[in-house]
Image (cartoon, rainbow, N blue to C red):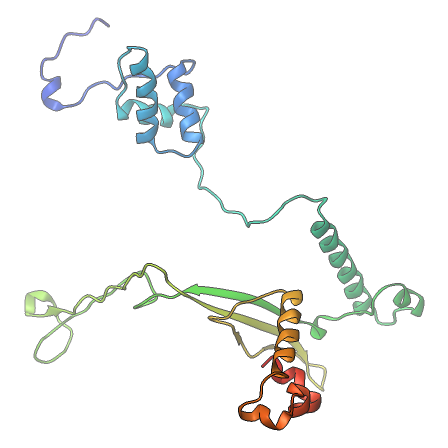
Length: 267
């Protein structure tokens, strides 16, 4: 059709000219919309071919769709990023409270960096702060992995008699593979780590790590739920009569521990 001689060997090579999809065609729009929605080139080919088949028109090959997706100037392929969950509304109550807290901390740090802050300025907002007065904490969650933690496995070739490293050509044998075991519902290791800039007596400031807090396997709740659970535990303890509670005579934690009753109930 385009003036070139017919080549009967094209079928033997199982290759040929890829059908070009016109930029302004409905097929191009279908392919673009499918790829933007996050489907693969294979699925985009299936979708456009379903549309073509419904109209009684010839279908397209995978290579035609792939070639169009690579050459069209209207598509740009990027690495898909990630974002944190939660609302991004700047007018939400949380956003306003966060801004107020950050502004207050900024003012407090500014006062803390001043050599002689005026009493008037200090009385208007919270007291001045310095970095060495604050400890910073962050949580770390790691999925349980049965086996080595790294994703790359290295095996070594050794002489089976001497145990020394040698090549396979010299009779060495490769060490056994040690695959990791996958489980359906892996648990998590959950810890809270803290650091702080500590000022020593001579004025030197050094970085220190706080003791890690391990809450693996524990349920973390908010202050309201925690206080409700503590209140219920304190009330239930007054109904216990066995074991150590015999000497409490219905007084619960207060009768047994006095001033440390709350600490004992929450330990």
